[in-house]
Amino acid sequence: MEEFIGGLWHRFITRAATRSYPQAAVRLADMERTAGILFRALGGDPGLRVAPAAETEHGARRGWLARIAHVGEKAAHAARDDETLRLPAEIALFPERSHNRDLYLWLIAQGAALPADGLAADNWIAANQAASAATLMAFPGFASRYQRLVEAVVAERPDPRKLPADEAAAERAIRQALAEPGSVAALPAAKRPPAPVALWLYPAPVAIDRRQSEPPATPAERPEGGKTQDATDRRRQAQREDMPDGKNGLNLPFRAESLLSFAEYVKVNRGQDDDASDDPARAAADMDRISVAQDTRDTASKLRFDLDLPSAAHDDIPLQSGILLPEWDWKKQQLKRDMCSLTLLDPRNAAPCELPAHLLRPARRLRHQFEALTPARRWLKNQPEGPELDIDACVRAFADRRTGHAVSNSGGYLACERRERDLCCLVLADLSLSTDTWVSDEQRVIDVIRDSLWLFSEALGATGDPFGLYGFSSRKRDHIRFHRIKDFDEPADARIRGRIGALKPGFYTRIGAGIRYATQILAKRPESLKLLLILSDGKPNDVDHYEGRYGIEDTRMSLNAARQEGVRPFCVTIDKEGQGYLPHLFGPAGYTILRKPSELPARLPLLYAQLTSA
Image (tube, rainbow, N blue to C red; front, side, top):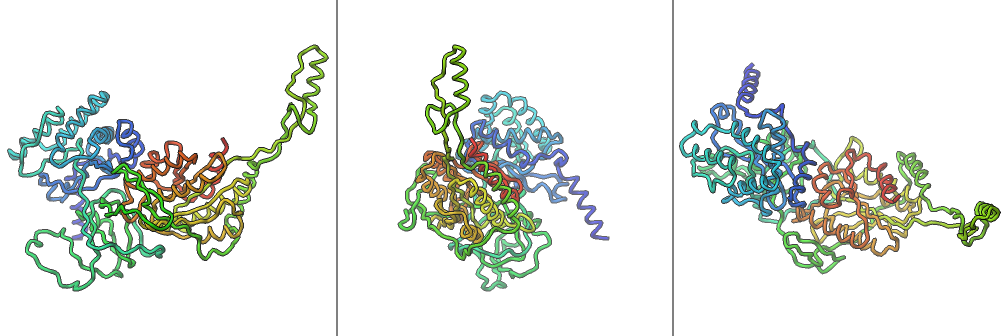
């Protein structure tokens, strides 16, 4: 009974204290496509990605009801740095859904007008006002929308008459800055920070890395274990830590100041085989900052997070061994030579095999469809020379001559011509560790990729078009693995099917190096159309600094170099977030996103037919 009454009280007080309108909420996921298009249309950096913002404590004064219910302590501030535009995962600030949507549009416009390097902590208020004034001047259509938002935001803000004198002065300055952007140079000093301003962007949070040692290498293959939950609905603040060594786990140092804080990270190694938490995602949501350490042991449960983490430190010393490739440093705007070392590998334990039974019927159907693309002989009429007479042309010439008309001299012969398809295709498959993820009760991503390569080989075997199959994965810049599944001059036989069946998930996705080496292979081909089909399940990343903006810009430069060599790249991905970065890499018509990964085996050959039919 006590728990029942407590639950009723918790729901009642939380509902009464929460100042939001869930029925009018607008989610960032619903605005993702619009956000990217609008941000770039307003002059924003096309390389920035749009991501959910992490909730942080704002420290502003709260009402007594909110303090009783323990709500309103955190807020998801919109922010921007040189890599990411962070927006709240959900906006439910106003009772009108249109106002919440307009707030997203305004924050996008504000982010496009801010400086490229983001906001500094000492001038972010003035920078927001300058960005607002610049947006209203450049795009007058925003004026009415901005005015409505200012009125709605002011109505939700605390009344200055009910605040202490110092906080009231800061609140009046904020209202003036919203009504007249550029009129307030700085906020008056106050004991407490002001309530979050929904129309402004805040300085990006600083990522923390406290590791003192290099993390252990991630194994290429690790069995799936435990329960996996998805907690990527919003972004969370995080920091990197060294893994506890497990020594003297029960001897905790006592410090008096620890009595005042429960957020301090203490390196206590908990047993790895403990029972899984009933709701680990909820427990993580209560943490102000998540500490991340790397371990090689299995855990009772798994969670997927979207975290604000710093990039790992890296060196820029050119390498000496392996197949050396360059890499683009977007911060220095420089293509660095010999920065990556690639190793060419053949799949191990690849015994020849036949096509799996569940693919026999789709393979027969595809072979029948693709036989129509096979080069065949055809007779060209009305030719000046040829092995046989064109009876129709001769009859027309005879009739024209008898009626007194001019006789055409174009010819009266039939010529036999065999038109070859002057094209080749290289399929580059992502074999990173993320392909070990299950997409259904029966298949993982790597299983879908295998089926796709099997069917693709059967389909192109019917056309006679030259094609090659390759895969890639990486672990830092000095260990990039390029798997040779089928060269162009090899037949698609049982040996190739065995190589496809032997593919296994590898490490990470340093895709720029894979694209550069694939371009070198295609550049040696004599065909006029050189198609590069890239199969991927996520954005570029590696265990070092190769992530975020760095990885995306390097991939973009590698694709530009491929186009200059006459290669036509096209990406097929199952990444649901691909809409945020793929247009920047491949252009509006250079990619396709499959919502259902299981469709990839059947769609890949048909995509090839569409791309090569022109």
